[in-house]
Length: 173
Image 1 (cartoon, one colour):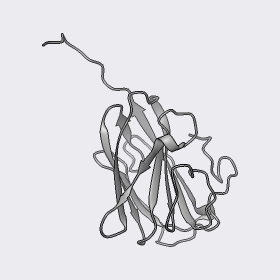
Image 2 (cartoon, rainbow, N blue to C red; image 1 turned 90 degrees about the horizontal axis):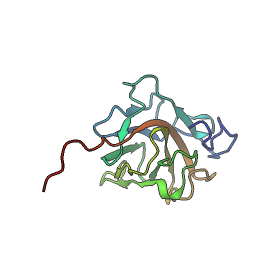
Image 3 (cartoon, one colour; image 1 turned 180 degrees about the vertical axis):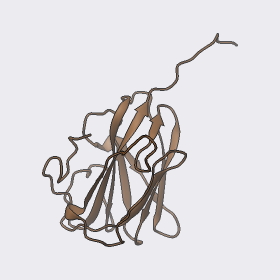
Image 4 (cartoon, rainbow, N blue to C red; image 1 turned 30 degrees about the vertical axis):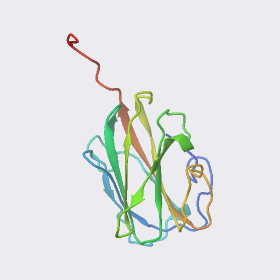
């Protein structure tokens, strides 16, 4: 997760502007429930936040299991700023279009959510979860590293993927 495109890791410019527009990120029924300590609209260098886990119970990480469905939630400071996410299932250090999690806005226009299932083919271990926010129309599935002049913030998290529990007992029926 240290090789993802970013101003910090690879010198990649992700935003012309940099403001705190993603105010909360969570995955339902996990420990990930991170609220930004910065004020809304605060300038963020390069519009980039790298949020590494502090410990196993930290609010900025989650442990996810293959085959389980999760709900990803994100909150925008303002309406009209779509949020998109990527989870690096294959652990190759690239957030590609097959790994996008589409988030849909609630009626209030600031709360976004989307469901996803960790594929059985995903690589176990630590991997990257990226969120990007930009002015309408926002980012598309191929723009995890794109420098979008109307993009405002990128947040990177590290999550752990666990292998699905094996079958046990004698099959019946």
